[in-house]
Amino acid sequence: MQASDLLAYATDISPAACCQLFYVLAAATVLAIAATPDSVQSLLTQYGARSSVGNGKDERAGNGFLIGAISRLTSVGKVPHSWFIHFYILSISCSIFWAVQFLQHGSIMEFIVRNQASSEESSMAISQVILAWFLMSFQGARRLYENVAILRPSSSKMWVIHWLLGAAFYFCTSIAVWIEGSRSIQSFERSFHNETPSFKTVIGVSMFLASWFMQYRCHSYLSRLKKYSLPEDGLFRYLVCPHYTCECTLYLSLAIVAAPKDQLYNRTLMCAVLFVAVNLGVTAKGTKKWYGEMFGLEKVQGKWRMIPGVF
View 1 (cartoon, rainbow, N blue to C red):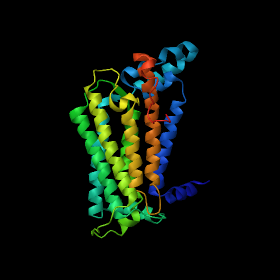
View 2: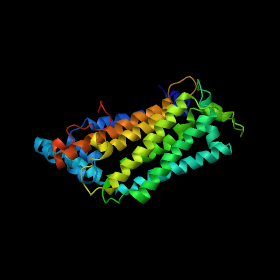
View 3: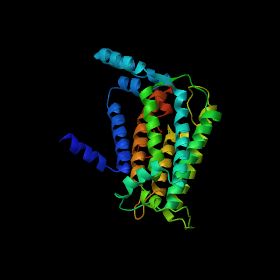
View 4: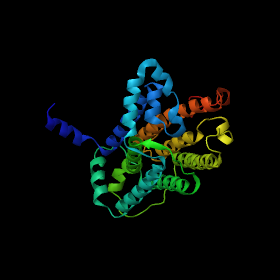
């Protein structure tokens, strides 16, 4: 295939498809890392106390050179774990930016909408666009508040690649919540019509609010725990990482709320759910392993990692 053919093919990909491709490739990358030995995973995915889990075993097995090379690689570009706050600042900033673009028919949004609308089989209603944007903003605002006022500062560090991947996720998702409503945005004329919420919308919003509240409770509880102690109250009695469960449910509810006409869910946001579930699932697996080594396997033996009855 010639360069001109590749360029033509690339320009035929819709903005929604670009977002979907990002989520799928990011999830595949995380799965590939999850398939590596525990010591490699700990260097690539863990931070703080959990980063020490499993290193010695693989070194004794003859992987010392590999571990050393990866350790040197990940030691470059370490950033504070407190930089997680940047994700939520970025999320809110993007929500504000796209809101201004939407209200003023901004050229950047118009360009994206124009490239997407022609490929849409069906579109979200304008009310869905606004609702999905609002819910995403609501989540970003709460997470920012938690980072500023509730969560305790951490001295741990993470690889800069983690930070870049997180930032890319929130930037992409700020577009994903409205991109499949491009045809409605294109015909939007600054007028709003009262619409009776559909059953899907009621279910999706109810799921979102319940997950939003439960995740807040989980984070508040974790912030009150003594450092490196085992959480055992509330949903933590049944799940190792219920706050991750809530995160997956939050994005699943957004996919339902933002489902285009005659579709059960929003495909782009469902790809976001895939990435969130894979990414947090790998972390939840490591967390259960760490809890077992720190507090004894019997303490976590009967708990699901993240998804009740499944994982």
